[in-house]
Image 1 (cartoon, rainbow, N blue to C red):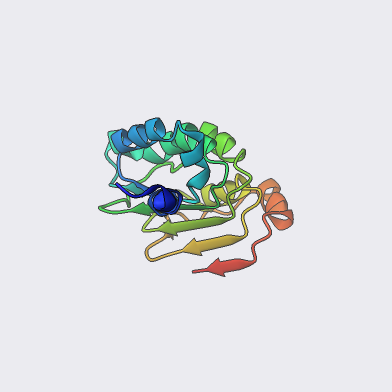
Image 2: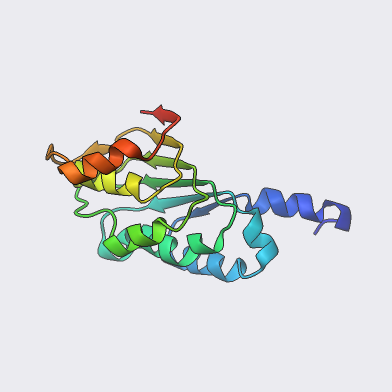
Length: 168
């Protein structure tokens, strides 16, 4: 409980950055963010991927489809895995990447402890964020195979995205 004069500042600090660890938490946050005032406060979302078990592997897909579309001021999105995430087959479904393309407000993408199936999957992720300016690849971001990126995807990558910051 806070006084009325501090309410807006407290809401900002509570909702500016949200962290999602499982599907139930994602659903709860979606319910809470039905209020347009609260939705407008969210600027950063971090999704934790707790390992390759089937039920949890889709948490980032669920967040993309159900949560991110409700956040008009979202500018930073982070994916962080904990546990053994080395057996990941396909990180993102095609439908998730299509949905992700709609979020023109996302400017910063941060990846930590993830293993991508191949370089094409990384390229497709970058292409699905048309306004990305900053990419941060933290510890243990790996690409499973050394397969080359197909020519059409390379060509699209050469024109976008325009990264102003790359941190590896």
